Length: 329
View 1 (tube, rainbow, N blue to C red):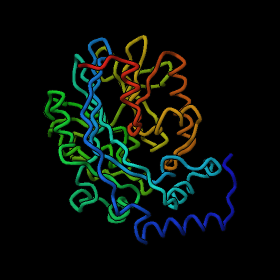
View 2 (cartoon, rainbow, N blue to C red):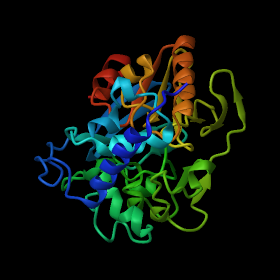
View 3 (spheres, rainbow, N blue to C red):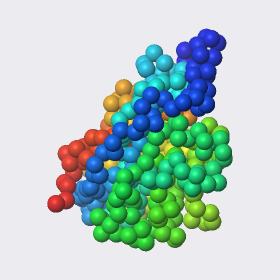
View 4 (tube, rainbow, N blue to C red):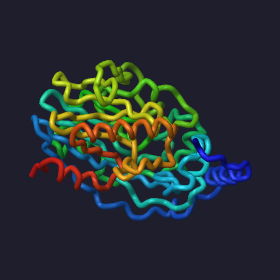
C-alpha cells in the first residue's frame, strides 16, 4: 500500500511543481552543457540472419527524480509522483535517445525514431494543445546535434526512410517520436490502442503523428506463455510486439526471439537493468502498479531463457550487446 502523505506535504510539492512551470528554468536548464560527440550507429549480428542496429538519434536531459524518486518517496500515489518529480532541481547529463533498426530477412523494422533538433520550437509543437506545448520543454530538455538525425543514421545502415515499411512506437513521448516526419509517407506506424487515447497527464504528442491510416493500432492476438498476448511482425514469428504498460498505460515493447535467447527492445519500461532487479519505480510513470507488473513479466522472461533488455536511455546498451551478440566489423 502506498504511504500516506500529509496534506501540507502534498501542498508543498504541488506548489514547487507550479513554480517549476511558471518560474524561471531549474538550475542548469537554460545553460545547456555541450552536446556529446555524435556516436556512430552500430550493428550487431544476433543470429538467424537478424542484425540489430543501434541508432543514437538525439539526446535528452531530465530531472534526477524523473529517472528515479528517492527510496522514501518511491511508493507514493500516482497523482503525487509528477509534482514530486517536477519539484526536483538536479538535472541529469545528456542521455541518448536510441532508435533501433531490426534488419530481418523478411523486412526492416524500426523501433522508435529518437529526438529532433527542432524540439521546443513552435513548428515542433504545431497542433499540440497550448498548455502541453508550453510545459513540455520544462519537463524535459531535448535536442539533436547536426548530423545526428534519423535519415543520416539509417544511411550508415545502407538504408533510406523508404526502405522502412513499419515503425513500432513504444509510446508517444517526444524523444521517441521526434523524427516521425523523416519517415516515408507510406511507412506504417504501429501504436498501442491505449496510447492513441488523448490524456491530459500522459504527455502524449498525438498531434505529431501523421493523419490517415498510416497510424495503426497494435493488435495483440497471438498467445504467448510468458508475454501473454503478442503481435507477430514476421512470418517466422520471431519478432513480435508485447504490452509493457506503466511508463504510459499504452507503452509497448518489441521482442526478438532467437529460440535459445531473446532481446527485448523495452523503450522506457525502465531506465536500466538495476531498476528492474530492485523494482525501483522511475518518477515518470503513469501507473506504478502497471509498472511493477511489467517488471514481473520481464523478470519472468529472463528466467525462461537468456534475455537482454535494451532500454532507450541506458548508456550501457552497446556494451551489453557486445557481450550478448557479435558486433559487425
